[in-house]
Image (cartoon, rainbow, N blue to C red; front, top):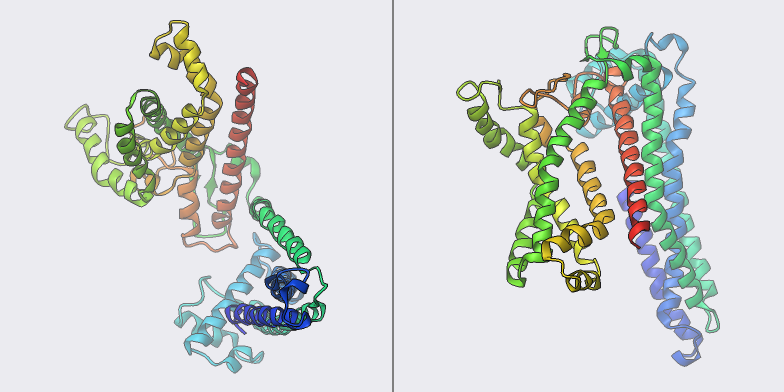
Length: 490
């Protein structure tokens, strides 16, 4: 049963339970609401909650545990001889899952029958050829152990999904019956429902933490797989980025230093544009602009934050790049060879980051108590002196946070870099040369010709993990600065 329909059925059971629970509560009180401990809606909500919540929790746990169970069951079907040199069992299992999805898609497209896909005696060469004709195989070739494991994977996955659907529906029905049995006039339905809602709120608040943990774990595990195939020392100290998709990384040079240099260089140029402009705009809007000017200028400035980054990338490629080339290229100073360069991406990215700095800084400056301004004016200070010596120091922790947000946004930007900075991984101080960043190479490595059995694809996770650690370090430093100045001015 498709997951969508299973969710709809559970919701239908919960809805029916709500109606029956509400009417049963009224019937137990003889139709008089005053005899009920809680409002009738609480009794219906109790039944609906007992039907839906346990069923959905079981579904989530099952969906999380099912892949691990199937992978452990299928892994034993892969002999050590089927794992080629430079690969690992985990990477072969990725090929098995990809082949299983290819079989499912081919069956859904009508290219092969389900019986043929399940037939363990079928010629794997014939199956492979049909899958390639259907455009479902992304690896160069598929071996017999992988194909047999993929067929077994499909059977186990379908069986487990069927059992899950039955179990979830049984839990939903049993939960609804349990809630109906509790529905009596003297039952404390309101307390039960409010306790359940509190638990749901705690669970919702925990999603962010669990999501962060899941992201980190996925990066860590795939990074470990990459370092099993490629030396970590070469990755962190290499000065050359030259992936080769001809084999399993034997001739590839995957040094991250050129990518980190490009990332920081472009981000520094972007911040050099965004921080002064955004901060000055925030000071003007909060301290000098009148109500009418502020009402018009602030929304117009924040419109920049809503423009898609691909539009900024096209602006860099079609407008800023040719403009810089006409000034600094062969017709001008002659130090710029092409429109794609660090300066092109940095300028456009800085324009994109202006609203992040200005809007947050404006709110922070407005939050400075008016009494501090009045005290400064009372001592004879001018408006500019008050801004420089009172308001900015008091708002400094928040301004540092705004700059940090802009820096994180700049480090993680992709489309502007791809279209405006080029794809060259090099170490250079010339801002008019093409360079690339970590995020741009993550995209290119995951959309290249390599599969996840090669370090050329797995390196994307190592790049992501490195970028995560760098960003975390910046957050820690900024938090230290914020706390230091906040203690001074609180």
